[in-house]
Length: 465
Ligand code: PMP
Image (cartoon, rainbow, N blue to C red; front, side, top):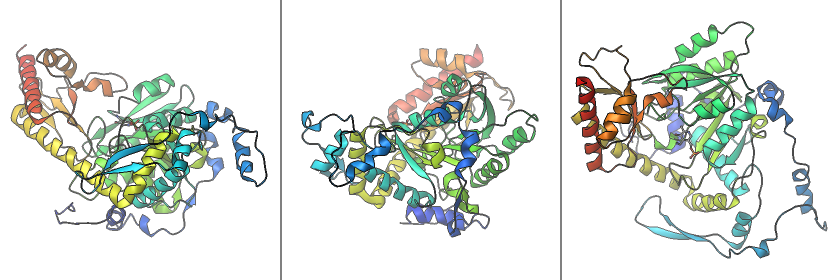
């Protein structure tokens, strides 16, 4: 690990890296804030969709705490009787976070297994929630007692959908960075939102475009309540938003009253040379007022995608509108692993995973340079698992020539034996673009070379067609 000047920062903890970045920036003294004021619950009333306003707390759940009163015989819950379940024990092998060739066996205790096999608390399994609150403090400097909450869900995708459904009514405008993660386009579409695209570039979301959209917003027309953005190693563009951009976007959220949906599944896959930028969730604490960021984390990229654990952190008024109990068993397994590692172990593991992707990125870029120099343009990603490159489909390579990668990628490149995604699928309005998304997470080195050779041949074919 090194700082922006390439100086080694050695074994800094994740928390000190975040604060290091903040405190070296005179305008960002968030680490210094001692008094934090969450926005009042009433503030969120206008942010809730009609559907969310209809949601009533479960009359049974509110009575559950009374089951613990000594002497009370509870006939309340519709829980199945665990003595009928066929599972008797659960053990799994896990790599050591510091030495991946070392493996230990972790076993759920009787109580942990019983908790994992039964219905549990809506927001998440209590010990896992405790661990995650600690993680958010380590990574984002957010203290648990400062008026925010965490909800665990079946991956961040599930939580994002529920959050948006809890906030928008059909016809509402939503701000989305563009190009945008293709998984949210059909989601916004099915909720009948009017997607307002905000331009992005190599430094992330363009705050000046966002400002002009908001400043030119027609008078009397309801303003957008949310902005969706992926600040680290964006899917599809691979870009990481700079600190300056993040601050400007946050300032706009304050001025124009919207909630930032910070979808950050590649936060743990940052392998850039600069210090890690603070998240929106960390940054919003800088002026002592919190509640404009709803942050989505995912364990999919660093523990397992199949285990389906993501978590949302943010204002309680919003999260209580989306809570829905997710698998107790996977939460119990994840907690067992994380608890055995501790925060330092988790950091070692995620740093190792991010280094793995950095090497994959380097292999891919070497092959890009070898085959696509003069045929494509790109910026080097510093997080995540994607290259986003523009095909130069005619020889004059004019900057503004536009172009359409779809036919080249879907037909010509596929015929030559390579699959990638034409950029149009990441544009909410589906317009043509010369960009392509290529994922470098899985492909072995030899195939990377072959794949890019095939893309090169397809582009050359298109140029002569
Ligand atoms: N957001 C983005 C930007 C993603 O790239 C992905 C995974 N492809 C997700 C959300 C979904 O993550 P999860 O597995 O946690 O649902």
